[in-house]
Amino acid sequence: MWKRLFAYSVLGVALSSVAQVNLRSEVAKPLQAAQEAIQSKQPEEALKKIQEARQVAQLTVAEKMLLERLSVVAAMNAQKFDLAASSLDYLLQSKDLPEVDRLTLMETMVSVSLRTKDYPRVVEWSRRYLQLGGANSRIRLALIQSLAVQGAHQEVLNEMPAKLKADAAAGKLPDEAELRMYAFSQQKVKDEAAYFKTLTELVKRFPSQAYWGDLLNRLPRQAGFNARYQLDVFRLMDATDNLEDAEDYADAAQAALKVGLPHEAQRMLDKVAQPAAAAGLKKQVLQRVAEDDKAMQTVGPTSEDAVMLAQWADVQLSKGEWKAAVPAYEKALAKGGLRREAETRLHCGIAMFKSGQTDAAKAILSSVRDDDTAVLLASLWLNLMK
Image (cartoon, rainbow, N blue to C red):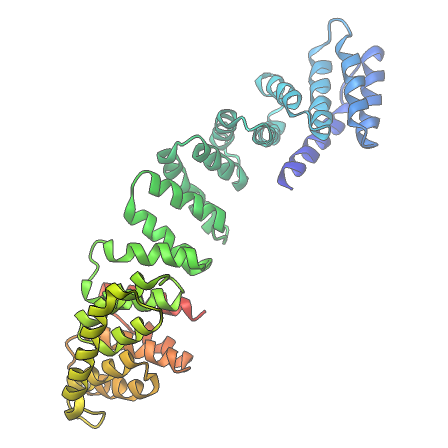
């Protein structure tokens, strides 16, 4: 659509100039016919009339300028973009082009060059346009896209902040295609931290199983990630359908065993048919479940010890007993003195969400602080609740 608008803008420029140009009759007659053909949506006929005018000897600068303006419009309407580019090049290189028209014609040159996939020319004219103070944000986007197509990913990253800043000033957020392009270039230059940040934005604004999967697989490799939360990453992977096969569920089960939650390991293994090779893991899980059940007989929700309450609630969470876990977490938090309060708040929020208490879950997850990994995981659960 924006390419059509450029063509219409050029048409307006061309037609408004006709009355202001003194033309010889042998030039005026075919150009007038060309104008009428353009307005009648007969661009091929218009190009024929423009070619007649080209044959007139010793065209004046004014005649040539008007002829090329009309040629741009007729050629674009006829989808003869190489011809349109040739005429635009003449106009833009001319010192006689009124400055008031220059930016409009530059926009059109960018449009035409995109249509012909002449990406170096898109880059050239986009940069000239921006250097002259052109304000159409689509031009910078065309520049960035063309740089990306040519593999100039560092240049994409150099240009993108200005685009995002201009959009923010206009109250506009980048669309999905822009964020994908930004992420792609970050990945190509191996800027993992920047890629993860953009991927997080994609997950928050355009959630999909694929974005979630990429993000969660990369999360444990981020600087500062607390390995204690590996099971919580698997929980999110499960919630976003990113545990795909028996091996994934076995890995999740191992993570649950590592933090002393064999019931959750059992639940993970029970979700898919396990190969014979996993028999040893299954046996280990069942043994640990029996041990855990025995140990927890002396602990319950009536305990007055905050740490023991939080541990009991974690076990209920691991069993999928969400409703039982919530009041124990709340009681533990109310008593205070927890060494890992951020973790307890995170798990309480998950239990609330799983038990259908969405508003309460949002409130407590929003209160997670003082632990960067827990804060990030809480924000991802909040995003999942949108």
